Length: 219
Image 1 (cartoon, rainbow, N blue to C red):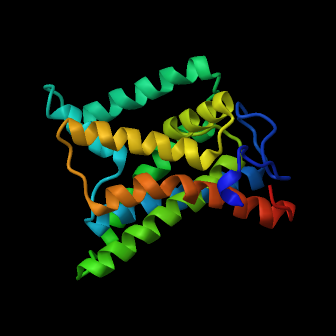
Image 2 (image 1 turned 90 degrees about the horizontal axis):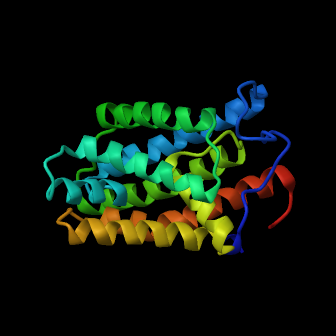
Image 3 (image 1 turned 90 degrees about the vertical axis):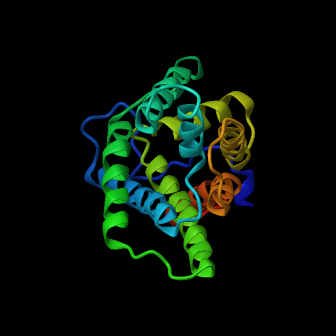
């Protein structure tokens, strides 16, 4: 079952090492394709108006207690997460940089071109699609092995330390983050909860699907 996956699979287009500034075209293609899907999912969650992602709730909650904007807090949180990479022995790569750039672009595209659903049921369905899209995109870009984004790097590092399934580690992270954000005053919606509880299994399913398609085996 995909929920038991503990490692990011390798394919013939995976980079041998994350710190690779001259990857194969196929590796770069799947990195960008995965990140486009990832960013699309993040944007769709915003458009659904069902609640922000857990890390945005955390930033909002912290901003209510200190004299900084949500954007500034988000930056500080990202830096703090990257610092946790050091003891976890995670390595950045061009994927870490592309992560920030492509996801930001896709979020803006969604906000400007995807219409807001007219009724609540449609909003919930869009939120579900958003979580699944983020998971699939995450699975694809992580397999490229060109460096994860801050949160994904933290997930992989903790998985390697604990040897727990990726789905469990990611769910623990997101639920913990949204709980702290809510406690500090951040706004939580049904979309937030869908993301917090669903993104771990969704990423695991994305990894499973990539491995199944390109390696023709089940982990």
